[in-house]
Image: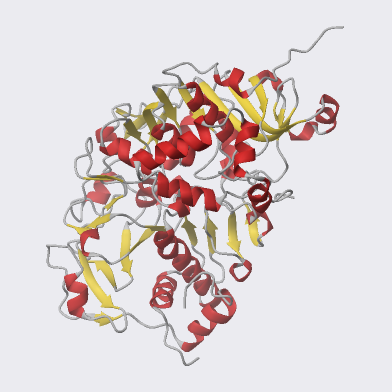
Amino acid sequence: MNEEPTVYEVMAATVSHELRDFERWFLGLATGEETILLLSHVPLVGMALAQHTHAPNSVMSVAGWGLNPVLNEMPTLESEIPTTTIHWRCEAHITMSAPFHPFATKRGDVDVGFASAAHVDKYGNCNTVCIGDYHRPKIRLIGPVNQPLHFSCFGREIIIMPHEKRNFVDRVDFISGVGYLDGPEARARLGFLGSGPVMILTNKAVFDFDPKTKLARLKSLHPGVSLEDTRGNTGYVHNFMPKKVAITPQPTPEELRIIREVIDPRGVLLPR
Amino acid sequence: MVQLKEKLCSLAEAAKLIKNGSRIAFGGFTIHNHPMAFIYELIRQGVKDLTIVGFTNGNEVDILVGAGCVKRIETCYVGLEKFGVAPNFRRAVEKGEIEVVEYSEDLAIERFQCSARGDPFIPSRILFGSDIPKYNRDIKEGVSPLDGGKYHAIPPADPEWVIVHTPMGDRYGNALYFPNMQLPMNWDLVMTRTTNNVIVTVEQIIDRERVLRLSHLNMIPRFRNVAIVEAPYGAHPSSYLQLYNFDAEHLTMYARLARDPAEFKKYLDKYVYGVKSHLDYLKLIGVENLMKIRHVGGGL
């Protein structure tokens, strides 16, 4: 495998490295073509990569319809529930059981979920509702969707964002997904089951959250991305720069082979 | 001989049941399984001031908002999935023309289960810290009489009217689904248990004799419904899972035209006001397009 990994493959490998064996993962719906690539296809490949490497006993739920789909047979996931999904091989189809999803989400069954947003703030709070004043918003967005559940009950949340300056704000205008709210004590005060967001994954970089302050900080740059470019495209006003910035680990040749030959042989999930 | 009450009627007759200001829920999920033929007829009849109670809404809500039929929406999502944001919804909220009452997705769905059970509210602990209870004044904070813990009381959905689309039914109101029901069908069924005012549109009316032989598929027995309407391709341009996919070309066009009020008015003039009947609508869409999206037996 001589070719360099694409940014989407780097992102998928980053997702995979965050996931552990015997976990339960939950993927919901996405809106718009770009978000579908980042929030549906990247985590799908990342979860499958983990299952093919270090996490064979994990379970992924593709929200509307199934557990552990066989990805190399899937067409693109252009809708959460395409009409032909019932024909896609997977370990369990959520058909008659939809009101009784196999995951008891509010009892803490889900270990990792995925979210995106128009804005994410320094404490990892997400906004999918509106920009500007709530009653006369400058921009109305899709609505809270399932973010309150993800961010309160899921063990860890991976936030995936297109890396644009305006997406990183000091304080979101509407909190639909509660990150660390206003500081390190907030989640315990709110009584949440889950431990909150663990990373903000973008097409340029990875952010994590300082264990002491719970403020977002730059953790690593994807291969070939400059620090200046990333800094200039990050709207945060707090100091998000660490003493030393790492390079996001590239997928190994074996991981790249699995992505390209086993998981996505037709290249329908990740453009390359 | 004693006669069963016939509930089969026309789209126009069924839509007349919905008065201005009704509280109404439509089946379906994002761009799937919506009773679009019924919704087009509601728009033609000029119904006003609807309160839509729903979850994970899509093109069915967007077109009603764009046609000026909606006053208030209680939901967790209005969007067109792959086709992006819901342009009419977005514009109307930004202009302050409609009221949105925010719920999270799980709670928006559970509100229907709450209604079906006849319960007064759902106790929830997932909204703390979010801005949903700050702006949704229907949600009240309370203390559990059992353990003294804080929770939010989430009100039931309690729609006055529920409209769903199913594959088949008989003239007396029985409505059947294929086996292997997927998520939208299951939640549609929950909806039909939340009111006595259920209207079903179906792809095809079948004989009572066949219903008796397919009784294991009769998920909405006739006593639940007040009216049943035949509307082939009645979910177009949404999909009807198992029967046809969404019409991607049409929804792409919709999403583009809906961004501009003048263009959207032309869309409505052509596809809603400009057709006299659902059959005329199907003629306008064209046999070739309908053939392209069909996927009969998709759930078998």
